[in-house]
Length: 222
Image: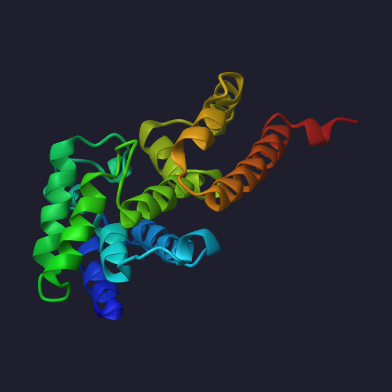
């Protein structure tokens, strides 16, 4: 059995990057940590618990699934707000899997390393076969839903010079085109996770409604 604490510790070293002011930028680490924690908790859901899951492989894949982006940031090839962007090419996933295998070679067994690599490589595939891959996919997609999505959105908006109005308009358009309904139907392998996503989406809808109310000064009406 893999040493899970050792995986956590190694990943923190690899995912905490230097901030512009010379301090630590925790965005990469916190995002991966959150997705990994969600993956381990999904693994304990009743409909998942009975399935034969390699916990070390699952944790490794969840923490390192986009480590190639962190390497690109350190090399100066992307900007901080471009971290953890969706739609990375197959080559990018291959680089993340290779980096994970290299960094955890002394912690994961060959079998666990292969399972973790497969989960990373198939992350964007519709028909993921491995249980580790399906759990990782659900954990990552869940991270995109609801209030947690605000932090990367704000990070991008600030870099691009957008304000509150942009967030409200984007959400309004997504509702008009039923974007999130399609995402909920297509993005989750486990019903229990989909239900959580639905709840998070409802919370976000109420938040944006309150935000728009304040932004337009409607609470000031006499």
